[in-house]
Amino acid sequence: MNYLLIKHLHVTAAVLSILFFVVRAYWSVSENALLQKKIVKITPHVIDTVLLVCALLLSMMLGAAAAQPWVLTKIVLLIAYIGVGTIAIKRGRTPRTRAIAAVIAVAIFLYIVGVALTHHPASWFY
Ligand code: HEM
Image: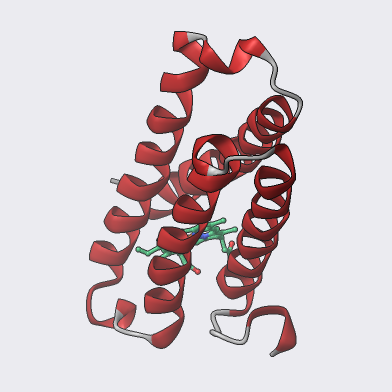
């Protein structure tokens, strides 16, 4: 399969992931019932699966060239983004906790974008 095509899919899924996350986090903080809709619950899993599968395909196509600190950094931070994200959407008990978690999750996401563009763990600070 075409590397550029998968990279494009990966980036598109990343953009959809953060857009959808911000909407859901807003609904979570404002306690909007839309958050409980089935489609709203399932769609992020589909988007994030596409994001991750494309990431793994890209890494496989890069082969040995993928064994670099920035790739590991992205994997670790993606796990952090998902973990903090679940606090923002459901695990946080108060709207305030969920709002703080949402801001941290967005910050982690922006840091990951910097890692992706610079190919360096220091991200925007490189
Ligand atoms: C929220 C998570 C992620 C975001 C926002 C993200 C974002 C991006 C972006 C914007 C690019 C394009 C970079 C460019 O055009 O130069 C990219 C490429 C790439 N990403 Fe991700 N990514 C994420 C997760 C991951 C993970 C977990 C992995 C590793 C398993 C990964 C592996 C790659 C690879 C191998 C490329 C291609 C690099 C290249 O060809 O220059 N990404 N990512």
